[in-house]
Image 1 (tube, rainbow, N blue to C red):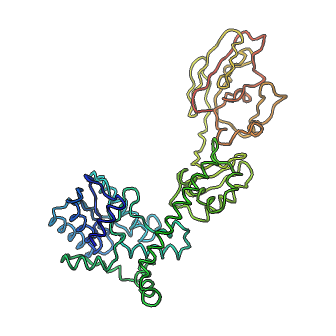
Image 2 (cartoon, helix red, strand yellow):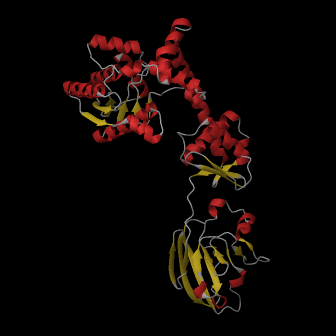
Length: 447
């Protein structure tokens, strides 16, 4: 077993010389074997080992016994030790999760805290080949795609799994040969959770009646599928990049992608926008259908939104526009949540060909009535050089301004006088008769 762990460390570059590894130790057979094998390999491979134990508060006195066992074990081997306590059932209830889900999330969060406590580089967990087979079967029963059938990886970010190519019976043989004691979690033998049923009923049935080598067979299948998934993932990333445009992704270009690439490209786009863990097949299919939606449509997804803007689909976390209205300081600065206006009075026409600067005839203005505010329903605008007034919304539509670029602070009186980055109103434009000009420059977000 220890040789297989060493081979995995070398082959997958799991631990480098001089690094520190936090080993998650529950006290069970797998984690005790992991701790002992890492300690044996630490000197020849030149790395350091620490240990962490989470008392999950599920099994009462048994949990207390497990914590003390791990503490004594680490003291015996001289391993730096860190522990915490958690009420997993309470966390599951609070976050509306199963006890298994809550336990997994809290366990990984705890291990990261332990890593920071020790200033360590890596976290080692004791998943082995049988766990891998169970995970693959579990994903299969839930209708997982190719990525789910590739199983766990030897290394994911800071998490390493040195025992992933070791069978459970090899771990038991190693413990027996080394004379190592360990704790027994009686809940592992209760056929309540889905994973326990796979471990206790389904895999043993397949081994006895269908394929005695089902565990290595499933793991070998996962390795083959991982190659395919990596290839398709790289192709999807390249395809998504080719569909990238300023501000979003070309909807028509996405629709032309083969479905295996399109689904992966959508997942990648959602991940880049900030959503990943809660994105399921149904969400990807909704986005694919949404590619044909009218411009301005919006789709709510876990943690992010998608919206259409003419030829583009965009993904992101949209923030509510802060509503405000304040007097425009003339002369001087007017600071708003969406940017700053700097106003000055200049003699003559003072016109500048700059869409971030409003040049308005002072004689056509009531300075006391000037304000800076966010847009409102029904706002009307008379862009300079246009035939007449129209709704500001229609102006944005005619100019094909994306929805996420319309949240601009406006200079207004009884109507909109200046839209930063676009135009001033015909009603206040400077001309050959202008004696004095109010010049206002907008500083702030990119137009």
